[in-house]
Image 1 (tube, one colour):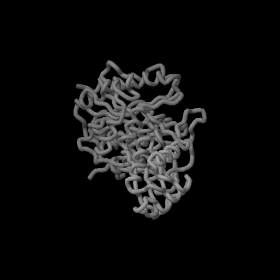
Image 2: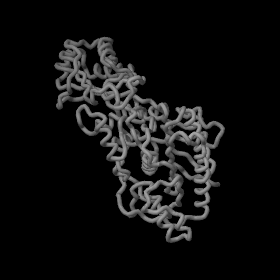
Image 3: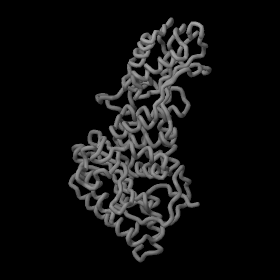
Image 4: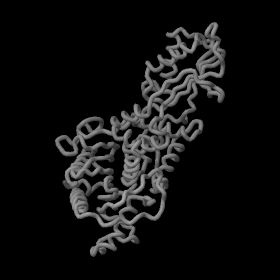
Length: 447
């Protein structure tokens, strides 16, 4: 069985090495000993499919074999058109990193600044989503639990002790969900709680803001107990109110306490990861992205898990893909942080990983905004071949604009791409540049 190379760059260089033995133009290929980055690069596909990356086994890569003239022509035409797009005056005073990869032929097509460490803005949500699906599984469910260590006296409906509530930072938990939770509690026979109602918020760390968030941003609540996206006691007050509405008497008080290890679940409310993922990506919802980030953190098993645990699990995925997590900074799950630093190569490597894992791809793709159709791309690329074709995550911070996702070229090949503009005068300037590149990719793949 053949193994994948350590990175897209390794694929590129190995393909170049192979062509040295098969082409008279070997002198035009980059040297394996050179560390400079070419302005643009295009290589052909190997004749054999590389093994799926789950995870990648690091070993000596298979050398690419000679491509067909048709494949070379299509890829060269696209690479040339993208290279010409770099003449945009915008790039005279700003940075850009670009990585375009042919998923059908399993080879890179165009690389420019693809290993520059840049702020990803909300394309960070792709990293969060793919890591969560890989770590937790695509069928993961958020679970808000009602538990107790005591029995329910069925003669008078008394819960002879405390009622514990486990919050899980569920961003779509609603008032109707709380109403149903309390109804299920009553259905279990509870008419009176002799002890206290104890809220366990140890699902996540106590921090109310992400690492590296700006103080003057409109930052979302980061509570373990959310109600319709609101924190600061909204859940607690609404739950106690529902108890009163249902006629369940509380002898004790509401307090914060950890759930004992021997507690048993008597009611629960669940939501699927897909339910949260769709709004996270299509609408670029920061709170939902952070909630997914903290679900991953909680997988570590640590009480009060936080950014460090989520980042560690993300880094494990990056290391398994052979791209070296030490070169990147994972500061949060939403991309709000100014401390995040990724590369276009990293984003495309993860998009390629998701594509090869059909289970992840089947859940990721429908959640991405579609150009000229919905989400944060609804007003972009109208009247072009990219419309209804590009499925990608947008990203915007002051001075930063990014776009990363998938599209189908005119030759039917599926492409993964990442474009990060940094130091730009306006988000509109970055978006216009990205839209132009997407149009080129959609139209120049060859018929």
